[in-house]
Length: 189
Length: 172
Image (cartoon, rainbow over all chains, first blue to last red; front, side, top):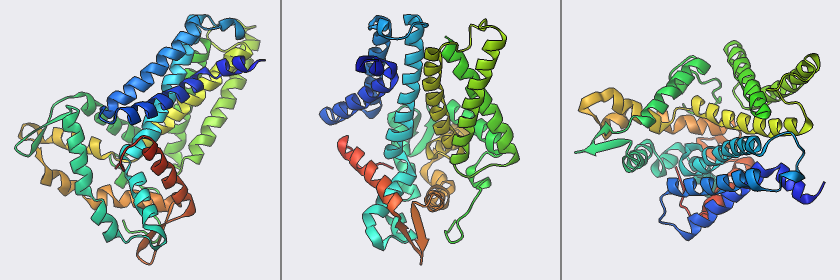
């Protein structure tokens, strides 16, 4: 088995690597590019690459059994799922996860750490709500008139309702605070 | 389409098993879900193989060759990771989703910021996430101060470096 065959066998992973590289290059070269567009471009570029490789690449190097069309479907699906993991599970955590933001603030505070009051002076619920409202207005999900917010698009709202349904199915409750499993002995609620 | 059908069946088995097990006893961390997905993978491979032997390879929608199983494995791992990430979104209340639902509930009169921040306060949006960090041993809480652990620092450094690589500011 040659190196080229091995690379072909993990084509969706290679495509994920290409997607991350394109994303980094685009973010650095075009800082003004809206972030969702940067993500779409990087994910799309690597998707075209992996589909093209399956359809027109050196398929004779691979074991027989799947037609080029079937291979394209399998690789594309695998790659899209991996890209979803990168975007939602990694990039988006750095972008909007409260846990990561708090962790970075505490890391930057060093060994002394921070009290709850110090943490909240730099990062609090008001800031979290304001940032998300700005993002949702920019994304067209909500509209604002005289400081009052209204539903503008039902796409994200449908996703939010689906999430509530999944919460009930998995956790038996609509809200996480009703179902918290473990509470640290000394951490405030 | 054999790897896709196989992976879809295995994922369905994982979801059903998780729903049943989690109703009985819900673990508080992801190790249990990872172990469950591994068990489902082994069970699926053994079942597919046994079914193909019994049917003398006639089941065309299930993996047959080693190449089929390799593609099935890659797809199943990707599906499981995506599923786990989505499940984590189910566990924690997303501020954006909560805001959208509150605005929708307000109907035609809309919702103003004080109304939103009245319900979505620090005790709802910040303190539970700090508690998660303590439970995950990324942060310790002692003498009224939160301090990051070596594991927490390591994770924070990864995100600081990654955001710097993207030339992006601190998120949140």
